[in-house]
Length: 291
Image 1 (tube, helix red, strand yellow):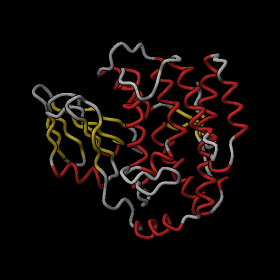
Image 2 (cartoon, one colour):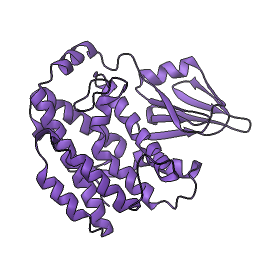
Image 3 (cartoon, rainbow, N blue to C red):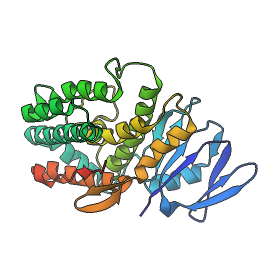
Image 4 (cartoon, rainbow, N blue to C red):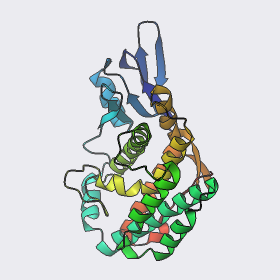
């Protein structure tokens, strides 16, 4: 089972040798078996990669994330076909029943607000009572936008009354970086299961390639929030980024067992697809992280 998250931060050449990822730089050469690798993050624009390695990583469903000259994620490598029966899966996705999609979205929103509530409770924030009230008021398909109201209260409780997600600051830089890492993991799983990321349950922005990924990842955002809150963020540099990348190796509880977050995302995604295909939201398996 793949589990390694490999971050390439400096000038290097990456190539393939006997099913190994070979990392060559001026002073050293390292090899990592591709069977151990779940994600490769190429942070430096001075890194060169062979086509043979890229094709092999695609074949093995290894997520490859490329960063820009500011070392922020800007693109990712995705296969054209993630599963042998992709055409069948896409037809099923188009035929998902609208009411079931709304039920699944309601469950996702409920779990996200629950996790936000649990984080505020662990921190002793009195705003948790308001989130508990929003949970009680949650309606089918969240028609009253309890998610949006909860988010405002939640972020103000975590980062101060004057904080806004639209601000240009180190907190938002860290949050956005962490969310992009989680989003990429969801993109990989959706493609690997044969579905397409553009067709969402709730998100339907015509300019968003990852509507479905944005839907499914919502309950995982508080994991990033908790990590960012624990950082002493004066600047957001390489060390802090590595901590956020390493969240994929954090242990969480799902379906009664401890799993690395990377593997938990696989289990969760498959359970959501089972729920959508079987019209049964009880099949969804959410994570239970320990704060």
